[in-house]
Structures are given as structure tokens and as C-alpha cells.
Length: 116
Length: 109
Image (cartoon, rainbow over all chains, first blue to last red; front, side, top):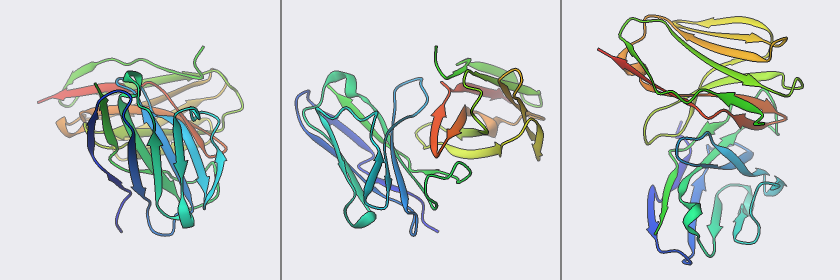
């Protein structure tokens, strides 16, 4: 079974530029998560999707961040414009059941973003 | 106060040592507790999962939860160099994971 796929793996951009990250979850997984992991910290949830519906986006900085999950499969996270403080690893995860406390979240390798 | 507190380390031990990793949490409503392992340049992977007070063992790993003290632990017996990674405790709140800061562990041969 293929795991969660993310691309690109690394991205270096100048501040104020836009950037987008792509995630393909494990086949059949209805729930998709985007997390941000700052250096030396644990991941923090940005947004959670149940199929194509965003059910928790309370931690997403909506002035510059946006996300979409068309057709309830792949997802894209965008930052526009990027700021220096956005440098972090952006992790995508997926799970098979609806927001279950007991369901395992499987993480992708992440996209490491550096904003100069 | 953070919801989950974890000593970031780094922690360095010789091969074969017993390792103890710990987290404290503030919200007594948490019921599901997890330990994730994260190798460098990789995403976290679930190591162990428990939802009750007491111990849960899986090979060389033992997860311990003390709900009365809001304290969770992970013990690694006979540690190996391949155990060198960052260990993250996580509490599951309705499908949302709240992670600790992570403890960086290095096991020296």
C-alpha cells in the first residue's frame, strides 16, 4: 500500500512570493490533515478535511493561507504571500475514518519550506 | 501553559540502556494517548497507542499512562542505534492530534 505522497519535498522562495504544496493521501482515506512543524517543535494542525469539506480550519491563518481538496482526494495548501516566519515543514496526513479518536493518522514525508 | 509539555532533550544514551521519555498534559478530558517516532527528514509514524491508565507493552517498548497525574511515559528497553530519532507524545482530541515538543534521542553504539 502506497503511503501519503507529498510534493515538492523541498522549496526555497523569496518572501512575498506564493507557494503551493500538494498531497495525495492513502487510497480510500476520507480524512486529510495539514500540519505545520516548526524547527524543534511538534506538528500543529492547520486544517482537517472530511472528504471535500473542511471541518476544522480554526488554526489556519486565513489572510495568507488557503487550502482545497477537490473531489475529496488530493489536496493543495497555498501560501500567498509567504513571510519569513512561514519557514517550516508542512506535513500532510490521512486517516480512514471520520475524525475518530482511535483512528491512526498516517503522515507523509513533508515539504520543507525555506523563505528567504 | 501548553496543553502538552515534553522535555526536548537532546537525550544521549549508550546502546543497551533503558530510555524513559515523558510528557505531562493539562486537560483531563484527553482519553487517547499516542507516541510517534520521527526520523530525520521523515514524517512522524505511530509507535504506540493507549486509551487507559496503566501499561501497554509492544516488544521493547512500553507506554504508561497515569491519568490521575496527567503523565504519560514511553520506556525503551535494550535501546539500539536504530532507535535514534525524535519521539513525540500526542493526545487525540476528537481526531485532532495535540503534539508535545518532541524529545530527540541518540543511542550511541
